[in-house]
Image (tube, rainbow over all chains, first blue to last red; front, top):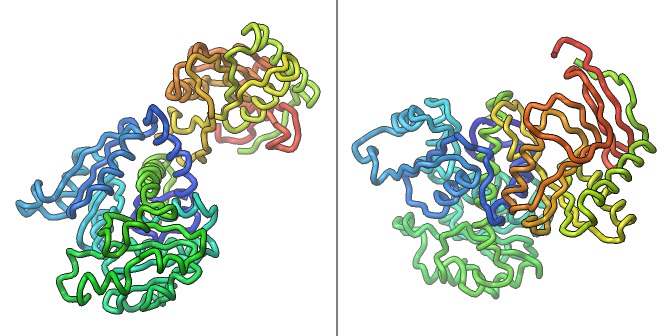
Length: 311
Length: 185
């Protein structure tokens, strides 16, 4: 396989997804060493360009690049020429002209990363574009599941909460179904977009149905900053009807695991005892995120002599 | 371009004898097995390292730790490749600091793999000494590197390929020289 950009999981082949997940294993070993650095991407530069606030994704990408010996530079839109009116395309060209080999882009508009690929020659990694995709988050979720379950095929995965605003849900839906999982989503009807069935999801409006016999439970962050339109009556009602608590989790299989892409609203979409419980892999997800991003940076920038542009 | 078998250098018995001799040499040179560890370079250095450890165990009655090393991330030609080398896990479950590390590989050629392996080991700790054991030394070094233990020295031309076949991977034990036929060279 060979791809130039990582824009999303919708158009990624099973082979490529598997290759990224296979590569993340050896990468994770490096993070656990005393000397957390390999010389692989020496002389490469990775720019993180973020038009939305983020701590973990951005730090995760920067550390992933640094562990591989690439140089990193970060652009936060709030403190850059963006506030002077520079367009996304001009920003991309500017960063590319400085010699960046990879641009990691987060942007509030769907398709922003794809747009960048048309105007620069550098590798573009989508770190979240609007409500569209967040491929590395889904890949790290899949890697975390694989570590524990050894397979994804045949698993029942429940994704709970604010599906409408969630790019993580979309990327996971595409990725998990490609690898053979059965994906069930549940949330308030106002937060369930139409057309999810066509994407291969089983849709429920009560979480109990999705949780019944699930192997994996992914609780999504209620995107409070996007809730001004009155899509839910109140936080308390949301928590009572849709939040993940120990009682609901008991419906899932005894060996079910719990994921959350973070940052968590403790006490809203997930109770503290579940988030910190023995089945929670939330801390492991963060470590795995660095490993998966190392794998992505490695696979994008190494061996691109014979690549074909799939994305 | 295709590869055509030219000559067999060692058969199964010959390989077994060479391995037994190397095992004796490792023990002799290091005056026993104190602080000794073997690290096989993936892929074919791995079964060879395991076999050497078995022989050392038989001779000295001591078990020597064996690790496996993937050197892909340390290669110096990554930017020139037009494919992705498959990444395997490194499995060195013991400290290498202050140890006598014997690197094990199938063929010593340019020395670039050995260089990468030494860098990879150094990132795991600070060995007392690093030594090198190979089944075949075929010459054509591009770096100032040499092996401490050699199964067989085989003068080759750069057009040729030396193939060490190992039962665990290839279904049989033997070493052959192949010739490249065609234009791509």
